[in-house]
Length: 619
Image (cartoon, rainbow, N blue to C red; front, side):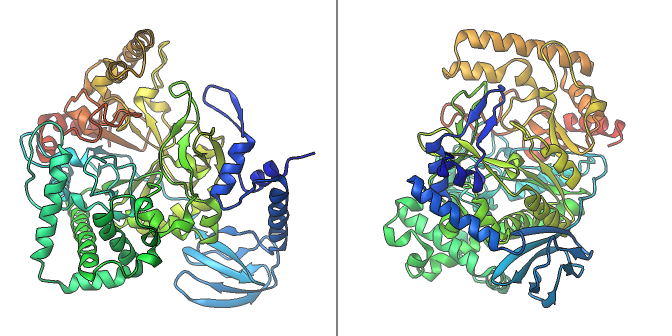
């Protein structure tokens, strides 16, 4: 007899099994299924409870006249998959219409709602594909590292602006940085930009306030962040008011007030809302617990970040950059941060996003990030995703979506149990990306590295979303190196990422030696990996025509990828990498400054050589 728990799990989108990167087939266990169902609000503690929930779900789906969502082509009449009878249509702008039958009028770009007989269907009117951009290049750099070691403080939005303006003179089309989502300013050592508190709000610690307090090659967050917060508060105390601020705050409305309330409560009760008094753990309970001046202060911080980023993007595109800023959307949000406090219904509870076991991590990975619940996403007509994307496009014409593999299936991990994949509504989510990117006139990069589901890369290409190709992954120890002309056009190519070694560090096995130094691998593994790395580096140098960084950049420029990203650390021949995955305090993650200030790097001879190399390749 079939197990109703596993039947319910499959009905809710849990994959019964998957194949990991080593080729091992892994089955989803019953305990894992029960834990992940509970995270969706579908308790299945007993077979009887699971059977009842399964029957109720089957009945609800059978009663629907149409699917929960339908993708249509914007501007074209559409035919529904079935005749729902009488319907009422609400367009994204609030315009309403009524009709009958399976034929719909041409729908404008956007997310619309079709209602019939007590049911709702989301209509995603999207372009079939985003246009492939022309060949080009740009630079990625650590925002915090744009201050020189001998200059107090860490990089801010003014440093970003001046760096971008200088880069624009070289022909670079974009300046890329890591996520700038709102973080945890009360916790000075929580530096990772990929573990944000809220992805729809900005990090005010990068608002320009003048010099910091500490010099050195590494940012001293323990000293810098309290000083920065004091400087921001002093600036607010001197703020006499501005009609522009009042208008912006009114336009942002309830969502901004809720976020500002959370931030004010964090100042008093700590970073994680799960540690707060019970009556403050919901926005409703906390509505009257914060003085208006504190809410106004945190709203003002967001306004200042918005103004400075808006000004930066205008300056970069005004200076000739095609895209200006290249921003990065983190894959998830902290389970006890502002986003889950303000919008708990959108997220699965008690589980984390992660990654399945592989050769380097035989136990798998748990990222401590709250997953979006696909059923809540559909019930909310995909507004959470759309708004999150729209917030990024407000400041950038180029956006990287971290771990876009999660659009196909997301790996959820419950405490103490093996993880499993949960199916996501891929075609609808890709349609949302196309809608918001088309609205903004932007280009999108999907980070498609890891355990890639069959068909995903083809779906990305069909949507006009560029994939990623990393040069250091294209060299095999037996001598084969993917030739530059074999890189597919709908991709962005770079040598590495923030999680990987730089060009100089890769060739010397810097990441391998770092893992050995902190005891993550033994001497035997180190020796084997160093030998393999040396073979890869030798093969790549032979293909590139040399081991020098200029040869690597020339190889990069020749690739068939539409866009290429040059890393600031490679331009300056920095050996140390930005982040060593799997570490927190053992490695100075997210702290290393560039050897020179950002504008000086942009105007320096090394960058001029890069610009000449790119021009020779007709980028």
